[in-house]
Amino acid sequence: MRIAALQSDIVWEDPVANFERLRPWIAAAAGAGARLLVLPEMYSKGFSMATDRISEPVDGPSTRFLIDEAARFGLWLAGSLPERPEGAERPFNTLVVAGPSGEVHRYRKIHPFSYAGEHEHYTAGEELTSVTIEGLRFTLFICYDLRFADEFWATAGETDVYLVVANWPETRRHHWVNLLGARAIENQAYVVGVNRVGEGGKLRYRGDSRIIDPMGEALATAAEQETLLIADVDAAVVQETRRQLPFLLDRR
Image (cartoon, rainbow, N blue to C red; front, side, top):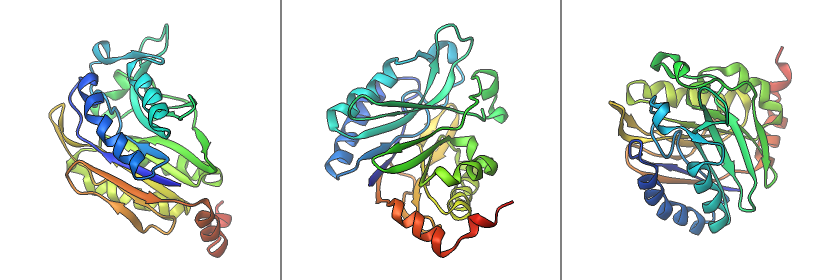
């Protein structure tokens, strides 16, 4: 499968402006033959704690955008957004994966970023989520989840590719880069890490998005500018890596 990762800037709390900015990038990814395009965390709003203002219902505008554009361009689209189910006090930070035939999968961020007060504004999810897309097994994570290796370990047996969408600030960029590589190496799986660039909520984001293979080698990387990363991933590579180097069998 050809995967694209969009390292984009995000207009603060303005989904309509972000939808317009994203459409040409989606067209470019489709034109390059990508079957899946991954957008950053809170792709349409930015990492805002103003949940009374930015929350959307299930299947709200940011989810509909993913569904509609996936159908329009005939590919899968993934991005996180502030989704509040009917009757819920607070929203979830939800990673939505929409398919070209109307399929929708959801992962709700298990680890809200308490250092920034996310836990005070968003409800924590409770379930890990793995989905199969066109023969590849994907496990979904959001930003701060990257620091919790046990959940990556727990899902390694059913994972070919980890998707990690983020708004990871420049001040801790080395943590982001090194943890992405570690998760790929220790689980012998691909890792697609997609971070934003630009400024939002008084924070600066450098990007450093990358697609990493099961041996920890970077197949595609980005610096600080808006960029579309593209790489081909193959479940057979995961299987062969684990066959030649059966490290996962020694876990206790």
